Image 1: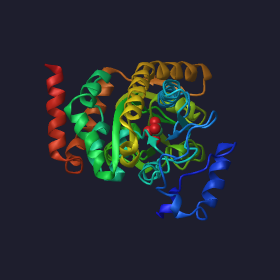
Image 2 (image 1 turned 90 degrees about the vertical axis):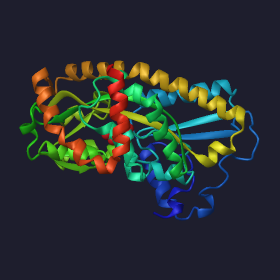
Image 3 (image 1 turned 180 degrees about the vertical axis):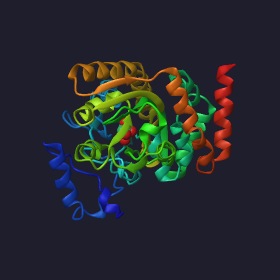
Image 4 (image 1 turned 45 degrees about the vertical axis):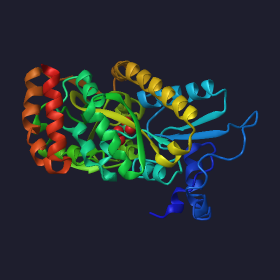
Length: 359
Ligand code: LMR
């Protein structure tokens, strides 16, 4: 992919998608010199323009846990810096989708992204896919003890290999399965084309259940469901609802089979150029925004489920303990199959940490 693809973009005008397309069309003429150009504009702040502007790109809707946390971050940073540091949030893949947001960050075209943990394997960090192992985490407390413990911190430090800095984790929640039929038992998945994120572990999960995984960007998922390119998908309900997937899926099965969380990432050049005070201000605001995201995530998913039930388009199925257990048994081989990809040492650390939690 050419570097000028990631020239630091001008703001898209409304409507945002049209703006993005125009920018993409003009990207070739914007010199490569722009890419990796001064990350922090030298110009001093004026009454109307901040001294530093951070561009935060993400792929989901604003009313999701990630969207709300990003907006909270923006408000906190702007308030605490008295407008000297500005944050522009680009939701809904307005600037970049899953396929290119990480590269855009590496090229300095944006300053912050918060991809799901499932999307780090594609940039050479497959150990992050341990979070995708199906039916591994019993609850968010179990996840949190990994993300806040030494294993989680080691994973974040590994981002340095890609010129990135991991600033923290936060939750969306647990994923549910959707299709135009209930998905309550392994045999229900037979032959279905299921949209997945670019994670080998999630692909293996679907294959083990007898489905065919189809990797697609998040922003294309609803259309693919509507047109029948894929038959089903998995996501927490807040993502399902805010993308209006309920309009194109007749059944949502509350499998809670996998965790969906995020890491907020910036690029080393930016982080190193910031002075100590600004770095601390940004980091503090971010940690508060992530804590806020964690606090509201459950409620966002619960509210989305209530709204979805009220919409009446989609039957909602709850699994019995026995059904969930059968799913767990069915996906157990995924750990063995993907051990080499994730790395046996990482898996060992994961299991040690999980075992410690239950004692
Ligand atoms: C997906 O691609 O399914 C989600 O991870 C999108 C997101 O960032 O929540």
